[in-house]
Length: 350
Image 1: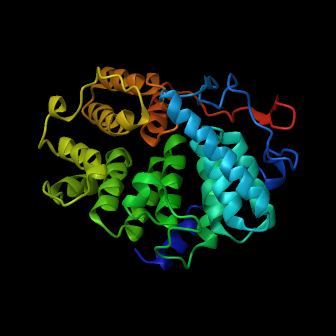
Image 2: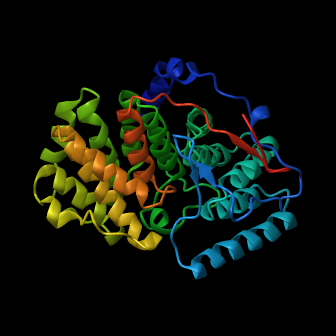
């Protein structure tokens, strides 16, 4: 898929993006210039699609202490380099890693006002909107990021990637379209979601990224009328694909879809992760089990699996977000934008 096709895709999907009127930047969450305003520990970090509070997920106290120190360090760097876009991005990332989503959005909104042509700000604000279940806003930001990076190829962005995404050599463009696909997925627009998961293939430079792309494409294709494309993914899947250990859960999930391994070999549904390191691979594989049960008309089991995922508390992860969206859409509910938090006085507003 060439970038010219991507431009065509933007145009063909424009009507989708404006159906729920997107809010302008002027209505985004604002705070005072002082970046020290934060939510208290007991406050909700976000809300789910049902409007229920989401708070700190399970990780050792030492890990949360490091996250707090990371925020403090990035605040100091931000105040020392107020004219550097990287300082805004790094400070927002620290907030996001610590679950302080509204704080991250606030810093990124300031960055957008100061550096409106840098796509990184829109991608990362869109990601934080997505994680805080502000779906209209997230799609709007990913759209803007895509327009501003249309000539970009494989750049990891101004501040690069963290952790597994860095190891997998993920580009900013890949991240943007992956998250955009999730945004459409959450509003149950699977035919648009699968197209943006497919766009990730344009920016897949190794087997690790291809495995992730196929994982999300397969979750959409059979339900968006692209049964043959779903079959082709599994038909062409190389069970011996050379990937890094961080990507093995994605490959194992695809092998499970294909029937090369059984559910009992893939994951233990009764396992209860106690930290993020344990949770990530478990969530990836559990979500695959839920999807396969939906596709084979075992709806009750699929719902049970999705409920186990959401009950784990790791709401900041993509498989947990997808499982939450599955439950929400299966229930027939309609998305309502969540309340926002005004950071300068901790008051909620619509």
